[in-house]
Image (cartoon, rainbow, N blue to C red; front, side, top):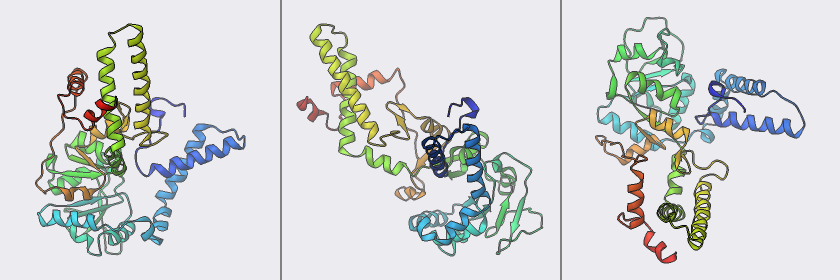
Length: 347
């Protein structure tokens, strides 16, 4: 779509997949059948349809009919939650989904006593407005999901609350700042306001990370990336030689480097490459991810690999004026790099 600025739609989470699929399918149908259409109208109609399916509860009913197909059993999720509870951590759940869906889904994933794991459960929270709009009060639900009329002066363990807002949540719990670690799967709806305005620690759940890590740990990827970096260093060092033979060698190196760049990108996805980087540049998603999350992982179950008191320290990444030092180390062998010695013999 030829939009710019605020009119450019960003598809940022897993809920965007059906919307993108429907958009591409309808556009493909219109083009193949010679049907003229206005891009703005098409996008609006499809967005409205997606929203109606979600807001009116149609999606929840479909999923509830076949939980086995749509929701995985969460043995590892239960292990994480139970471990945190045993270490005296206070847990809370804030979701936009209705209680009936949350209850059935969590019973399927975690077990019938899932509510015992959480100190607070808030449903139909209307995120991201929950984090910015002070006007909606908390409402209590009974065990059948019916609204109660009493004023909420405290958030009680074992009770279910609807709507509300973060400002009342902070006032009633006293939980503030870096003592809170909040996990979410949407950078804007879940994490941005909490980090920028309230100082919470944030963790992003990125399921695609599992596939990406598996690819970067393959021998093919590591071989290709190492040789690409070595070629880059050679090109930087040797471009001063301008005789005919040297120029020919440099051209061959440049061609080979470009081929390797394309290869490493296509290993992730032939159409789009990695969701985290485009060649040497981080993607827009990756930059937003780093901006709005302190840590990110494929699943909350990844925490099982670490002690509860483990501290994650930020990694030092080279700046542009530091990069030449890194390349010199790589190309002169000062850094121990996998497969580099083998490649010296090959080349």
